[in-house]
Image (cartoon, rainbow, N blue to C red):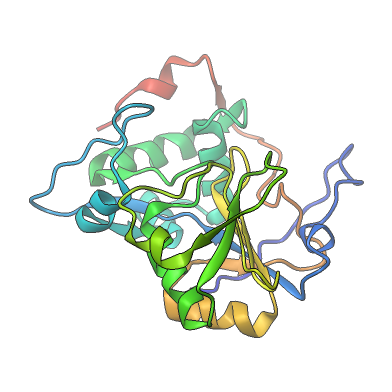
Length: 246
């Protein structure tokens, strides 16, 4: 689902931050894939606990269904995906503060519905095989996979990555086709993945695989969801952060 591109506001002191399109200037377009939340299927039992009790890719694909950000916004009564992204950044300690009323609505909805929070740092397992199979459909039997700190790109057989029960081998995932025409990048603490390529290719991937997200415009920067908090807030140390409002 292609969403409307969020309006990027200017932030004093960060005007020089590079736009996403400028950073990926070798490509015609960049699309922000929003990592889905998950819902465990009835009759299945999974624990999502870091670092030692995280399900395998196979378990996640068999036992969960993806839930889009638009659904979370609707269920929690939030304003938009920008507000949701700010709350996720607070949850993962990327932002120190959050709007208190929004946080209560969000965490209450998550607990009440039993949603699993969207994944950070890694390309989501629930999207991995469908992405790799789409690359196969586009004619790619091999793909480079590496992390943000890798100096060497390792070439993998796409079929081997699909057949593996485990997640992709590196965090801060980079998937790059051998001809360098398609790039997926997930950065540290990010709840999104940047897909860069020709716009026609992106449209085909997004439309057939059901990715939810938006196209970057000339103003879109990595802090696309940022807004000044004007109401009552909570911070990392607040007891309210850990209350189960259900």
